Image 1 (cartoon, helix red, strand yellow):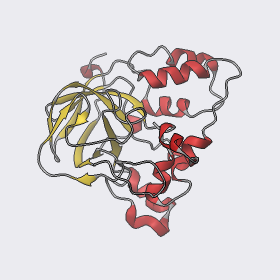
Image 2: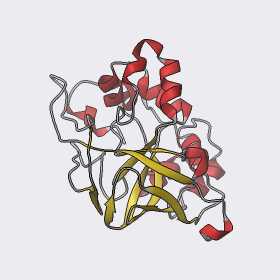
Image 3: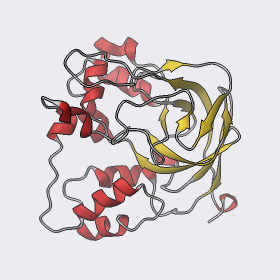
Length: 245
């Protein structure tokens, strides 16, 4: 289905963010979750912003998690949910690369191809939060709440390199999987009782990231259970950084 056959989502970029690998938490693995706002055009290649870093490329970054997009509209929800910490909920606070107005998980589908400045990107999965979100925000249940609300934001693969700047508009170029809204797929990914037929279908959805196709393949096996405790709450030792997405 082409964009002309849909009602394309339309958004505006209100913030761009990059970060460097650091050791913010004594005794725990490094992280680049603390992103800073950047001015001027930012170059995007296959791995995302050229000036951005990730600490562990086995679970962060890469071709199918090149850029993390988080809607600024969600900040009001988090301020209301955690009023004592309301001041910290502003664009960039979750380690995202892009903040926008006008587009949320409800407006997109897996496989959507979007303009991002002069770059072309494709929606390929939601964010799978890990314990670092808890530590970064100082809220022990942040990752779990992130997941259960479905307000995770999403990741892009980069189809065409280019540059983007604050103020640029985002438009839908093509919609490949109109039956699989992003919000629906995020909900399915974290549903412990997901119908195995749905899981099996999602495991073959080509536009979905390979890691999420693998996860749905496992969920399509009757009797499979997924323990998310280590990812969401962390554990001792170097395995901490290898459980998030």
